[in-house]
Every structure is written in structure tokens, then in C-alpha cells.
Image 1 (cartoon, rainbow over the protein chains, first blue to last red):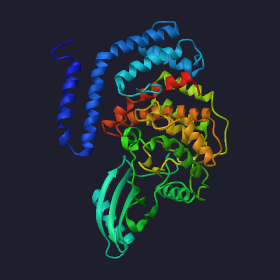
Image 2: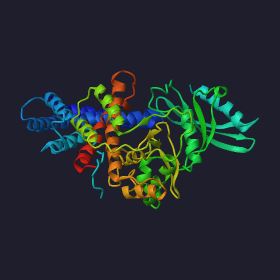
Image 3: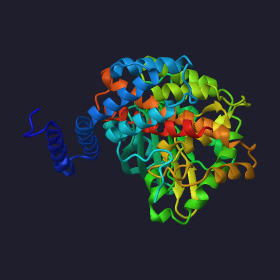
Image 4: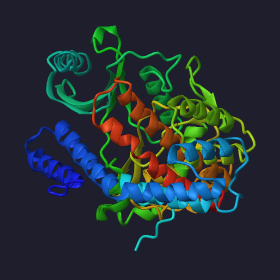
Length: 121
Length: 331
């Protein structure tokens, strides 16, 4: 991959530009511009954190399902097994694995969100 | 569109304020794709008046929509208000003469509706500990209201709600293991059916106007009113998506379960078990997650163009992060 600039730096540059022009926009467009800047930040995080998050999800799901596969295959099978009632909250390791996957995903999607159970200082 | 509404507000000023009344203020406050809210005012025969217009700006089919018509909404506000619930006064229900389409006019109530301010602004520090109990209290007259005859209100219990949202989820084509597990768990823990009561249907921090001195000033946004389990209204205000950064305070980000339940019982409501509220809270997280998915789909299908829609799709993971904790804790 090219490093000068890296892809996440391009996303960051666009986000910064949006923030620069935001004060000149009407309220509706200023709001949408903030959403757009957030989208660029999400893209940046997905580029930097996404591969490790996906690799960990694949490893965890392969462990739960006792065989290898790519993300889409394993994810589909996991959904089917839960839907069929073959895996439940009682299944050893299931909730622990889903918790790790949820934490990795929210760190990309909405890092400022404070999920249920978060201690507030 | 804006010109039409302004002209309509001019006519309303004359109609409500009497001969010679003229519009002194007209400002669109907010609104989604299908609903507009306008603040307007006029100098009438009895002095100045400040009002709110709620008006539908897109076609609506009450048979298939999840929300009720604005006429139904206004009728429910009047009925619950007459039964002692804090609601804005309905001033006028628009008809063909007004040329504003489906709309009604209510009095302006002062207070704060921004959820983040209720949970975090120092102006609410003193009253905040009282708010969860007050929320329990105000639900009692709402749930005890007999809906006026002739209104088309849907009745939904836990199983029906799960069916409806599972159908929506399946139709999205998304595959999310945590949502699957939440559906499965909730289906195995549906509480015993109860006699359905009138529900606000969107009772959460953000739809309640709070006064920094007195607390609950008015319950707003009645478009999702329906009949069902009284614990549904309690579970929704406890859903973490509406705690605005204060997950440590389960009721709306400002209070505790015990105060909500105690306020409800003290005001004469039939006591409700916490596990029942927690069922609806978990279903609330699941429901909001699926609503986020459908907002993404409204963009991917080309129906909506706003950048906001696909980004809301990235909020599903918020509900998943909540759901794994709730699944671990149990009801």
C-alpha cells in the first residue's frame, strides 16, 4: 500500500476540510456535514482497525464452530445455528466471543458510545 | 412547501386570533421526512398567543403505518390530558378550511427536551434525582386512559412485537449473530400476557419536556401510541440508546429502576416487576438496532439520499454492545 499519504490520511484530510467549512453552512447542512465528517472518521478506523477485528472474529467464530472458514461463511453459519436454537446464552464461550466481537466493532463504528454496563467516573 | 405553510399559518392566525390577528412569528423547528413542526405566534383579539403546529408533509396510510394519524394523536393527547397526564394543550385540529393538510395546533410548553441536557446539564442537577419517579407517576394516567371510541389503535404484545421485528430483520438480509441471539433469548422469556392498556409508545428521554424546577412538564410525540403491556413504556425509557452517555442511570440516563417502579405503584398503577421492564428494555435495544438497519436500507434502496441514513446503519453495533451485556446479565 502507498504510504504518502496512507488511505486513512486521505479520509482524515477530507474530515478536516468538512470541519473547516462547517461554520459557513446552514443548520441542516452543518448537521449533515458533521455526519459526513464522522463517516470519514469511521472509514479511517475501519482501515486501521478493521483487519485485526475481522481476523479476531474469524478466529473466535472458527473456535465456536470447530472449523475454519472466511468471515462471511462463519458468520452465516453462526447465525443459522443460533436461529435453530443449537447455540444459546448457555453455550460455553458464545457470549464471551460475541462480547469481544461487539467491542471491536463499536470501537470502529461509534468509539464514543458508552454501552450498557459502562462505569462512569 | 414553506410558502404554503406560511400562508396557512396566516389563515390560522386569523381563524384562531379573530379578525385583525396577524402572524408575528413562523419558524420551522424540526421534523423528519414526513413530519413538520412549526412554532408560530400572532397578536389576536385576546392578546398574543404562541403556538406549535404539527403537520404531516408526506402521504400517510393509517392502515399500514406504524404511527397513528395526527387527528388520533391529538385526540389521545386530549384524552390523556383530561385523565391527568401532563401534555401540551391541543388548541385546534386543522380541517380543509385551513389548507394545511393533516395537522393540529397545540399550546407551547416551556422546558427542555434535549436528552443530553437532561442527563448532564447542571441546571437539572437538583431535580434530576426526582425525575425517574415522576416518569413512573405520569405513566399511570396515560395507561389508565380509555381511548376515545373510533380511534384506530393497534394492539401489540411481546410475541407480536418480536414477530414483527424479526420479519423486518429477515427482510433486511443482514446476518448479525448478536441480534439472532437476542431474538432467541427474548422468545424464550416472553412475559405472561396482560390486559392491554393505552401506551404512549415512544416514552423516552427526548420525547418528554422537563422543567429544571418542576421536572416533567409535558409528554410529547404521541405518534407511536398503541395498546399493549404497560411495561413496554417503562422498558423503552430504560433502553440504553436513550441514556445519552449515562449508562449508569438506567432510567433515561437520569434515574434508577426502583424509583420508576415506585412512582408508578405510588400513583396507583398496578405494580410491575423489574424483569418485565427488562424484557421490554432488551427488546427496545433489539428494536432500535433493527430500526437502524432499516434506515440504512432506506438509503441503499435509493429511497433516501441523506448521508445520515447509512451512518445510522453503523449504530447497530451500539445496540449489539448493549445486548451482549443484557444477555449476560439476564432479565
